[in-house]
Image (cartoon, rainbow, N blue to C red):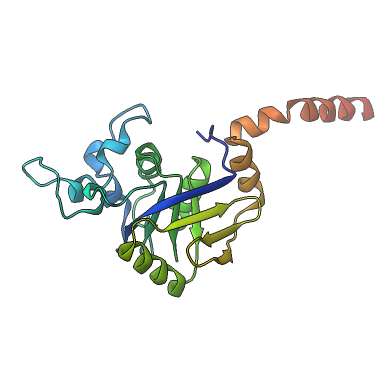
Length: 200
């Protein structure tokens, strides 16, 4: 899915300081029947965003107009539960390009990297600090530099490194998914196969 190049992102953030948010809370199972990846953002956190009457829940952060941006700052252990890729589709389709937490479920992290969404792991202490800053001042900006693998909180200048698989980093920087990456190596693969046949 990753067709959008990710290099440097400067953005405000949306705080979701809840721990153990699972994929069913991110996108409820009843919305998984769609065959296209588009439109899942409409139902992101559906049961938290809307009341049983269908009206928006004014207490939920995505319905609060003071918060916005392309970075979601969550609590610890985000994306646990089922392996549904739709959770990442919903987050990406809503408009987020990065998610910050102190811990992600492994499958969610891999699904994110496969679909152009950058998961960034920071310490519990820095995560709490960032959440508090955003809640106090929704205009708080962060800068994410994928090439340098740094997250910088712009108001304070505090910067930390984050880890990422080198292969997935290259795919994100170039806007490639796994298939695109392999197709880009087609000439190399053909040359290798031809040389292998000649050697026989």
